[in-house]
Image 1 (cartoon, helix red, strand yellow):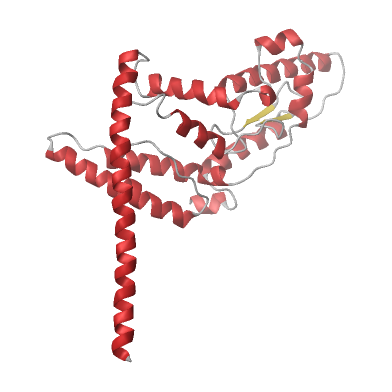
Image 2 (cartoon, rainbow, N blue to C red; image 1 turned 90 degrees about the vertical axis):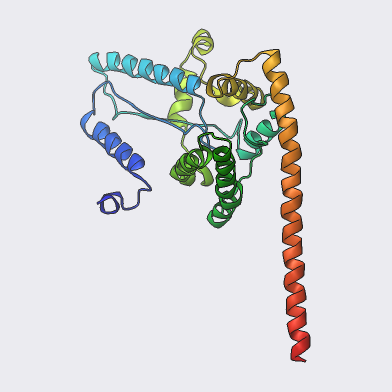
Length: 279
């Protein structure tokens, strides 16, 4: 039934979100209500920081409440305003920024429990994506799980990769599409905030240093998602691990490239031989 309901919507999330906004716009006219549209937390150019997002929600609520007081004083109000909140052209961020930040800090913030050398490949071509995950995820995952079984350990990598692929496909449309948002209402809202409140409820991303943000974010991800304490011993052990995996990674790449070259050479030899015998 989903395709019949969704029509031009890519998934049920966007469809139900649009329905909810329609209800608010239709039924909440004249009420102290507004619509807040934050960007997603990963793709360009719609990345939004959670803390900044929470501050903007509070700011929008304050503005809506203030306007409701005006309404009670017989000042007419328009329909519920819409506040889009995303990264602006004044301080843009994209996949290249994120990729560079991760690659620049992988030796500074490695994981002790890593299972391979960390690197990132990005593409907006679906067939390239499927080809890459076949070689880098699916084949690699099955090989690692086989090795884990031989060591008497529980296989886990294929299961992890399946979850990763599912999440990637869910947000793929948002990750590879450029979006343009009207921030007029949001810009006017931020102009209403006093300098003191701007410090308490920081929500202006135009002055944010993305490089510093990614550094802090990766540090936090290591501790709270990777469950690894930021101790000298932990970092020392992790750097030994990543150096070893870096060597393995280079060997695998060399073998893979050599195999491709050998196959191409063999194919050319076979074709040349067939052409020679035909003559």
